[in-house]
Structure formats: structure tokens, C-alpha cells
Amino acid sequence: MEYYFSPLAILAFLQVLLVIGISIRVIMNRPPSGVALAWLLIVSMIPYFGAAVYLLIGERRLSPKRVARLDKVREDLKEIAEITVAEGLTNVDWDKHCRNARTMATLGLNTANALTFGGNNLELFSETRSILTRIRQDIDAANTSVLMEFYIWHEGGLADDVLNALISAAQRGVYCLVLIDALGASAWWKGAQPGRLKKAGVLLNSALPVGLFRSLVGRTDLRLHRKIIIIDGETAWTGSMNMVDPGFFKQDGNYGEWIDAMVRIRGTALLPLAAILGGDWVAETGENLRQMGRKAGIKLPAPCGDSDVQVVASGPGSQGNSLLKMMQAMINNARKEVVITTPYLVPDDSLLWALRGATGRGVRVKIIVPETVDSFMTRHASNSYLDGMLNHGIEIYLYRGGLLHTKSIMTDGSISMFGTVNFDMRSLWLNHEVSLFVYDVSFAQQLGRLHSEYLRDSKRLDAEEWENRHVVVKFLENSMRLMSPLL
Image 1: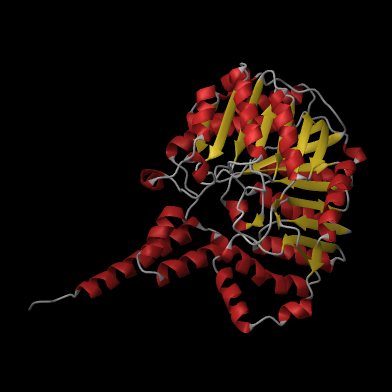
Image 2: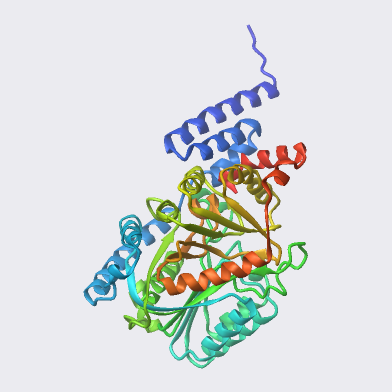
């Protein structure tokens, strides 16, 4: 007896096998339930292509070479941490802080090996052109080293002034090292500026390069989203801003210029920022972290100010979802007020419950987001969360002065989070991020004034008005919400 199986039947059978195989893999990897269900839906409903996408980006998979390099970096960082403790750079007078500060710092230490550094001066900058001008001035004054890493570098405007300052620094013998994400700055890498930097003697490398072969050994959408500058081992910058002039960046959108903020740091917290940047460089190049530090003239920085700062890095190579736990703790510990700024509002369930629990305790929660953003899927997925937030008393403000890109949280006028992480699942689970947790009332006041400026240019979202939007719009938003864990 002969059996005939049509090509269509064979393809259908293979698809069933793929769905079963990947379902088993997803279940055994135990991702969060929302992430697991989203992937199972994609793999089941989009034959073959869904399975291929999962195998490419479905797991937080690093190449074996990168894992080995990161393990070596952790060993070096452990030794550096022991030296900083012995030298007293982590001595903090917790009695001057609110009672939640010490428990927050302990959480960061236990989940991210993040020490709290005392003696820092933090200056908050919120006007992007002033930021670029001051960075250029700092580079012009550099004598020893300039270390930089960014997600995006974009040609044009004042960003070119920074590039020219970097070239001049390298030509006069300053040790200059730059790490830029391969995908975030893909257009820039194709231009002439990378060649100009290399020709001047700047050590330039792309972070997390993409390609077909690399997709087989590691996930290609795990991006370096950090923004850090270290100058002469004395001055550091970090925050939300990429190396772009907003007057020249993404001018084809209808959301206005990007609105960012950066903090300029002098003091002991420079050391962990330099270590994070150095670790990222070593992960790409395999160089020795200690030798790199000696070339850059990085030494133990002297205390300079009254702010106590904990630098928390996160990413696929780290353990314990430390940044997510720190954000949860900030919200859960709040007693009076929580103010959040983020360009992308796609929280996971734990953050949603923390926000709802805060309003249930009588805490006033304000979230400031841009009225429009540059991502269709993220915009609609974000909108799907607003109903539930508004119904639980969370105040949503739509910023109308441009695409608000600042990422911050401030609670009770005393504890602040400021850095690169968005209030979304991609930032918390997939990207390499860095954030400052600042235990200092004076910095909280600086951040509070910035929040007030944003609120003046914002419209508070009315719950009843929002509820009356068209049912087709609601369906689109809820459909995009299914993709939330993957955005």
C-alpha cells in the first residue's frame, strides 16, 4: 500500500513539531508568564517565521566568548570593590537619610553587587544644547583620558563639535576610547565620522555587532543602551541623552525635538561608572581591564560633595533583575509621592502592582510621558495600560514640548533614580542599562524642579475622556499589548 503525503501536509506536520519543540523550550526556560505566552502565540500563529524569530531573539543568550570575558571582568571588579571599601570610599552616614535609604542600598548591594559611594557632587543639566556644549568644554580641557560609550551617535550640529573636540584631544596625546552600539548607531557607522576618529588615534569599537553568524551564537537584539563619559578620571556624565543634537536628529517625525537630561558627576561614584564602561569595552575587545584603567589614568577618586550614590548596571549578563527590584522597592517604600518620567511606558505586572499599591496607600503617583513617541507599536501598547492606571488613581501627564526622553523616578523628595532605563520590559530585561540611585535631598530637589518644568508643559489625561476613545483604537492598543514583553 502506498501512502502519499502532499507538500502542504508535510509543512503542516513540521510546523506542529516546531510549535511543540519551542513550547517545551519556552516552558523549561521559565520566562515571565507574559513573555512565555507572547512567544507561544507568535510561534503558533505565524508558521515557521515565528519559530525563526524566537530562535533569533527569544532568549537572553550571550555568546560563550562574551560570557567568558564578562566572568573575568567580574573577578577584576571584585578586587577593585575590595580596595574601595578598604579606602573608605563607601562610608556613608545613613542616619542623615530617610529610613528607607539604607534598605534600598542593601538591596542594590545584594542583587547587583552595587556599593554606595559617599562624597559626590551632582549637577543636573536639562537643556540639550547646554549639555553638548559643556561636554565639549570638558573634552577640550582633558589632559589624560576621555572614555565614552553611547547607544546612538548622530552626525550634525553640536554633536559634531564634540567629535571635533575628541579628535583634537587624541591628536594632542590624550588617551581616547569610544564604544558605540552597532545597531543603535548603524547609520553613523556607515558615514565618514568613524574613520575620522580612528585616523586621529581614537580607539573606536562597535558594541554588540550584528550579523547572521552572530545570530547563531548569541541574541542580536540585546543592545548597549548606556550613556557614560569619563574624563581624566575626575569628571563623569550619564543620563538619557545620546550623542545627538536634537535639532538634527529624527527631524522627519511629528513629535518635536527629543528632550533629555544628563548629570555631571565629580566624586567617588565616578569609579563604578568607569568600571562599567571599561567592562563593556573588555567584553567587546578581550583587553585587560586593569591595563585599560592604567592607560586611562583611572585612580581612586577623592570625595567631592555630599551626595551618596549607588550605580546599578543591568543587562543580560547580570543576575537577579536587580534594576527591576530596585525600582519596585522605590515605589513600594514611598509614603507621600512618586514622580516618574519615561518615554516608553510598557511596565511589567510587578511594576503595575507596585504603582497601584502606592495609590492604595494614599501615595500620589504622577507619570509624565510624551504625547507622541517614535514607535507605532510601543505607542499603542503603552496606551493600553493607561485605563487601568487612571482607574486606580494614577495621574498620567502627556508632555507636549517634544519627545520627552528623560528617565527618572523620585520618591518623597529624598530618593532619586536617574539614568538610561525606560519604564518598559525591553530596558529591564534585554538592554544593557545603567542608573544612579541617589540618596540626597538636594539632588531630589534639582530633579523635582525639572519635573515641575515638564508638568507645566503637559496635559493631565482625563479618565472619562480617555475611556471614550473609539473601540477600534482600543482593539489595536490591546493587540499591541500582547507584544509588550517583546518591545
